[in-house]
Image 1 (cartoon, one colour):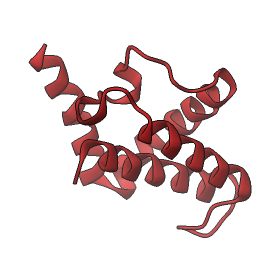
Image 2 (cartoon, rainbow, N blue to C red):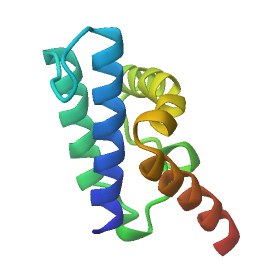
Image 3 (cartoon, rainbow, N blue to C red):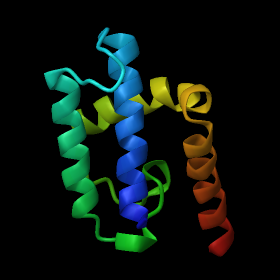
Image 4 (cartoon, helix red, strand yellow):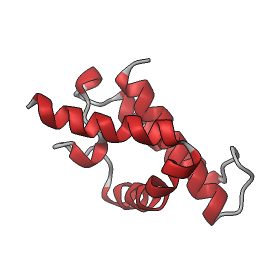
Amino acid sequence: MSAVEREKETIRRMVEIYCWKRHGRRKGELCSECQSLLNYAYRRLELCPFGEEKPTCKKCPVHCYAPSMREKVKEVMRFSGPRLLIYDPFGWLFHELKDKLAFLRR
């Protein structure tokens, strides 16, 4: 799986957790607001200038999200990040290790 595909999977899981817990949707279903946010994040990931060398969003030197969307994604990540450890421990571990490994490569 490519780096971009892994990032898409991570953001999808985070948005699903957020929508499930905050908007009362069934697990795996998204409301229209969360689906729009996820579609936007996918488009941004597909256009990422770093490609396979992409760092995690919080470590990225380029802010490719519009300010309003960046705030919404930050809100989702702040809420879902810690919960990812509970609902998807392997996904959380991979996401955290990617941050650490990118730091060591520099």
